[in-house]
Image 1 (spheres, rainbow, N blue to C red):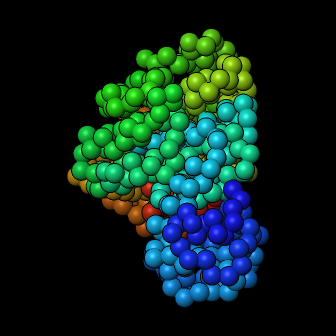
Image 2 (image 1 turned 180 degrees about the vertical axis):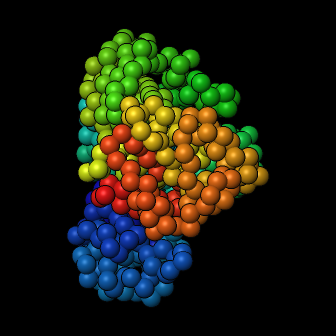
Length: 436
């Protein structure tokens, strides 16, 4: 979005120092500066104020600061993080775009990507990048939207009660989607009931003419439905928007008949995994509510692509099939990944290389043990990297895992799933496997 430096100062209660320049977008990363953007130095592990001069030299039009004034135009504020949220809220107030917000324990980034693909068939659409889903990513996503955007799709994550409410207060969504409630970040929340209550914060502020899009197959999600003051549209096996006659091709790409109150149509996807069908239905429900026809929804879904490291299925020169689902992991997504590996049309060995499922708190030991049991039931060989919680032999890191797999001489007919929480960094292993 475009705005004057004086408008930024007014929105955040700051002091303008320098010329009243026109700004376009914002970033907190000095490496991602674009011409004329606002640079927002944040104080975290490193103090972003140390990068102001570099950002301005790289083309930023102005910067926020709670410390020393750098080169060019500055807006002095007490706290740059607070100012970023205030500016995001002001930008939301200035747009007429319909805003869709997606939260949930599993699948929210995929639903965000799929939803953007669907509703782009109905108008100009802007979506948050990758997993920009916190108090930094949400306002930056709003500020990065084009002036004439029709639809804005945002992802919202949480690590404590109140987080979703704060993000929804900035974005003021018209449509709210809750994908699932499951064990993710439970070390911070303490229980699934608290997770559900936190995700349900998204429904509290939806306008009466908006829509709550809820997973009918998740009782914890549906338990939050009473918080919505707007119509509710459900998706899933028990939902109003549902999939019938689901089939998978050899690369796990689903096809099915989409049924809804708006009619039915055939859907073919270029994303992988049977578990993606639920995510697809959530996106379809949003599109149908926003006025797209079932045929337009199907067209958007057929063109959808997911953010990196989410159920990417590719074949190495050796013929080895590699399923790269390394972006993150929790018990539900790990189970889905193992099921996908078991479903692949390969005749040889099936190996899951898994990392830690982080932030599970008191569920940690049981959750990892259950994943190991599930792999055994599917006839999948389990290799653990950097953790002994699965109860199998532990490989110390990426190098040792790569060497071990190389020694197995995997090739045509074999398949490897690579999956773990972000701390594991297993996407590097997937890249090595595809080079071999």
